[in-house]
Image: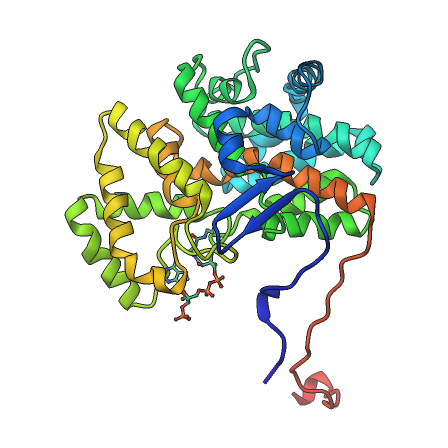
Length: 374
Ligand SMILES: CC(C)(COP(=O)(O)OP(=O)(O)OC[C@H]1O[C@@H](n2cnc3c(N)ncnc32)[C@H](O)[C@@H]1OP(=O)(O)O)[C@@H](O)C(=O)NCCC(=O)NCCS
């Protein structure tokens, strides 16, 4: 029997100054600031600055940062053409390909150094939002919408998705959602970015590795799975029975459980009220009622530390804002960009190659058999 904990559970990889998570207390802190404080007061732009620079910006610093983001929003025509060529693929494959293209074309971003990766990271935070909006439209056979300079990051993102200026309250919800997704310590995709950065690879390579890792259902794909579950259940009265069938079949209920949180994910607490109010405002209370019934059915699992995670309410919020399920993981990427970039920068600052061991359990003394004798 091996002594190792598979999945690197509980292994401390390195020190970080970017985020602190207390999984037992349900606490999340970005650079010293509690997530609830940031959710209430900070925009995505301010949060991004905080994550990248380690301190909240002054008014002048924020103005300059927002200007840098606005200046970087447009993506080259060749990247639009690349999206066009792969637009039938899974949205995360399109995003990975487009980010690969946009960073390959950005020759000034090739060096694995903080002074290069920081401005490149700011550009990429802006461009990933543009790419996600463009691919959403192009999959529907529409032309991409050029970014607008007079809108904030979240409002401009919705504008590029749908072609109309969004209601201020809808933009505010997306802004909040992006703040909540901006950073989460050594989650799988950020770990992947740090592993790539640790080899001395450039920022673009590290972000592509992160996007590839975010694709899976145990990480980025859960919000989509939750929304599918809600639609499949259809009626709040069916929720308890549905969950019973799932859990008795040994299946995991999406949107529940977390590698670090053993109580409620503080980001889920932020989104619960938003999902309820937004559902009411859009004349759809049913989804929230179904989610509430699922939560109730999952109460016995609390004894095991299984509580709702951020993805549990995110799917309903996105759907109510008209964002289709297939765009949920790309939305997560739009939000997580500053966290990924901050970790790449931190990795570069005191770099060490990340190279764990595997305990070999296969045979050791086999003799080569020529092919015609096998
Ligand atoms: C996120 C996740 C991978 C964490 O996994 P983990 O840290 O390995 O959790 P564990 O497997 O140690 O969970 C402990 C127990 O709770 C059970 N459990 C965990 N998540 C569960 C879920 N969503 N539904 C039902 N049971 C669950 C496990 O089966 C395990 O049961 P056991 O003790 O009988 O073996 C897992 O909870 C999961 O797959 N959740 C659903 C996907 C999801 O929402 N992902 C988004 C995360 S933000």
